Image (cartoon, rainbow, N blue to C red):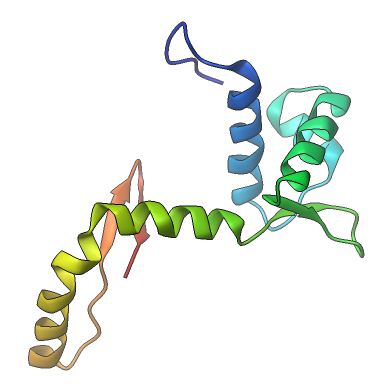
Length: 118
């Protein structure tokens, strides 16, 4: 896990690593997460319990594996709204769609992926 300065919190970095790893899979168990992250199972279990308590992950009762919840979507949507891109691009996208008869989408580049926001 890369550290980006002397004022970072290792616990927060580990929790975010759990979220990002879960985002790359549908569901993962504690052992799988610990292996992928190079962390101890008890540490991963505590992080998952904290994230579940805050509503960011949930345990699938059928598989006993963890998955992300929609709370991250809500947080991300709120951040997207604050940038105002949909308000700026919406009229242009509507016009483009009307002129071409095609669907127009708005995406932003986040590292090496395009994230669709409208």
